[in-house]
Length: 264
Length: 255
Ligand SMILES: Nc1ncnc2c1ncn2[C@@H]1O[C@H](COP(=O)(O)OP(=O)(O)OP(=O)(O)O)[C@@H](O)[C@H]1O
Ligand SMILES: Nc1ncnc2c1ncn2[C@@H]1O[C@H](COP(=O)(O)OP(=O)(O)OP(=O)(O)O)[C@@H](O)[C@H]1O
Ligand SMILES: [Mg+2]
Ligand SMILES: [Mg+2]
Image (cartoon, rainbow over all chains, first blue to last red; front, side):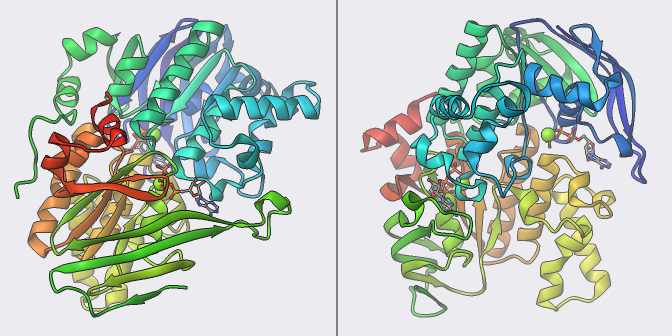
């Protein structure tokens, strides 16, 4: 359903960073693909290219991003807007900056429905409350009325997830969507994503530094380093038999409870 | 309204918190809904201390009040009852959401240098050297000094926030999920850095993390928080061996 071919993204500003270098990647319908890698390796830029939200004015982009046959890089902003709401749901890495500070959380969650469907207001509200319930936000009716700054970090992440899944997208891109969540809330989100993946066949691109979450949720993992995909294989192969040097270092650095760094 | 005092705490301690209660006022300019026009209490009667050079871990469910506690300690939240006693200087905060806390108009070099400038001890060229060294140590390098916050990745921004908080060697650092946006190799480098500087300059940390293994690796003591209360507290090794509360057991041993 998604096929990225030879994608490169270079910043044209004074820093001339090549954020993504010749990346090719496919996602099949219903697949759960994990994307891991070095901080600064281009994961977020790749996600932004898929949703057409990469910074156009400061980057040069080449290659193709085919979503069900349509090249996203050639879409008009109107087409993109429709795609993003209905077909592609996106959870951004820093929720505080992608949520509108002046708009109630509940309103923002139902925004996609308002923009892209004819769902009447009362039904939209019901669906928003349901979505908030499903991401385990406390007291949905109360939280609906709150503003983003009145939520905790993890609550904001869950609000973002609710707004990304409310319109039943075909592809869900989650960029560090569970970073601030404790193990219990994390498990709930993993279960939720696994459920919507199984029930509705939603494909998931899950970007995370948390390798234990990736391991539990994803059936395939791609590893990025310095703008390139250095490994792309089944979850089991990547964790148990990593081929690339960087992947090996990454797997070896997963914090464990074997040894304390701190000697007291 | 509480007050921050500078003296009258035990000489071993860098921080003492006594019977801290915090409320959020929901009747802000934004809200007209009557259900929200009330104070909501989020922290209940917390008492604890942090010794010089100690790393105290804080864990607990999302929304239980961890960031609120850190903000109250460093003076961002003023609406509290109880006592917060510091020894020496304002604690530095490493924020959970770094983009919101970095000045978007300034360069990374300027941002990291700011605490040194405010302190006013070093001349411009020594300050610049310290900034470059710090950027190097958090794995960014001096080539990042000319960029603006929005020209970095999420994890790079988090490291700017770390560099800024460490550069003046404050006595106490409130680290709110400081490594959650970093891949595990850089995470490991940053944890070592925090501990090295801690040792060298007798820094203390309140270390908030959802990653129990990270807490285990670097903390001396830990506190478990649930719905605004500290329900368990103790030496890390002992607590991991012998958690007394059901909630703690679930937190420590759910994988
Ligand atoms: N406006 C910009 N100008 C120059 N370089 C930029 C700009 N924005 C981002 N970059 C660089 O592009 C690279 C890729 O960034 P990206 O956000 O995709 O990384 P990431 O893999 O998501 O990292 P993280 O895990 O830290 O979030 C980074 O090295 C970053 O410094
Ligand atoms: N400005 C505010 N006004 C009203 N309520 C708030 C405000 N900030 C936070 N809250 C609420 O207070 C509670 C504690 O929030 P806090 O940010 O301290 O949680 P946390 O433990 O840091 O959670 P997380 O792990 O998700 O970051 C949450 O229920 C949150 O919704
Ligand atoms: Mg990123
Ligand atoms: Mg928090």
